[in-house]
Length: 513
Image (tube, rainbow, N blue to C red):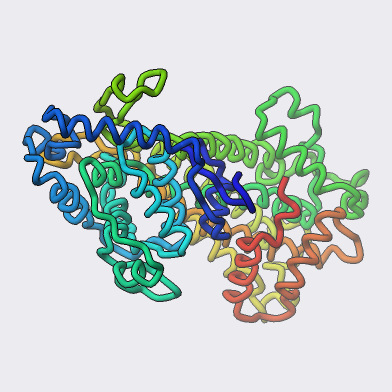
């Protein structure tokens, strides 16, 4: 960390929280002083290739199927600009500004690692856009995830050149105008720099990182919603006993069980039926929360490791390596495939499956709360006047619809591949699709969580004067501050969206564990 909280880059792995701080809270970013030596040294190797006349892919050749075409020295600058313009073929709605900010951050960090052969001014211009809040308009569709996120990154690079459009001061405007306003000179790309900006996984990593940040919040808060539901249904916390989980010690499961034990302490509702309850066991959606919620924790921990590793990885091609002493004359240029998004695509698909399973078990708890056949004496559909009022019947239907959409989206994008570039790029990751799907699933999960919290709070109202567990009572009070008790039918859409916004803003984060 630099002065006054500035995030300093040297190509290091970046934590999800660091990415989010730049994306959402507009933290300032700079390059660490000791990173410039490798950046300058690798650039010297590129310039040495040009001077020697040696044919090297990415420096003085065409790209993809045209990699065998040698480009004359006088055309190298035009080659880089044409590369960016031709690859800026994205379509669809633009990425939100936080995701674009994360892209700028991640791309600058990768180049600062010193394996890309770009001039320092390329990295400086990326950070100038970021720190001056000039956000390139990046269409969300058009990447197959190898050779990296070509189209999204081309739109990012286009803005550095003063071309294309950006979001600036709340408006969509021409990039050249925004750069001029902030005194930033448009970048004139030189040999290899266009390719270095385009090859990489920073679009899928940016969207995936910010989706994961939200996913981790919602996963832990499903423990809270589940605890509220268990209390409303007069369930037992016995299945969360530490001894049960010690003999199946998956870390996520152990953590979830401990979190549930904490949330369910000091409950009058529990004491009221501890010794006179004819039920032997609760349904799986209550009893198996540590196993299901814990498995999701484990998945997201793995995905977090993948994204944070990727954030500090050199992902363009070719890559430049100095000898162990960093001597320019000992450098080597190697072509490889670090731009392939498979690690991210598979991980993000995994996260999508985990979030969908959490939504599934939550939907079962919502049904159990409103279903008069199984809701332990609560009013049908949690209505004060069943029949006259439908209560929370259709809130459950909304949850079912959100779950259905998530189930469709949870189909992995990474199992598909469409050969591109004349068959040269014959296996691709589809990682950007994985990232965009995950983002939508997380949004659906936030709304299902809101519906369960709202439904459980209504159920707890009917257990009065008995008090729920201390932490459950606090959480219910926060819900009630946002959504009042449903005395008679009203439009519920606003309630659901309001509670969802509170979840997204961090109001319930005190109960994350």
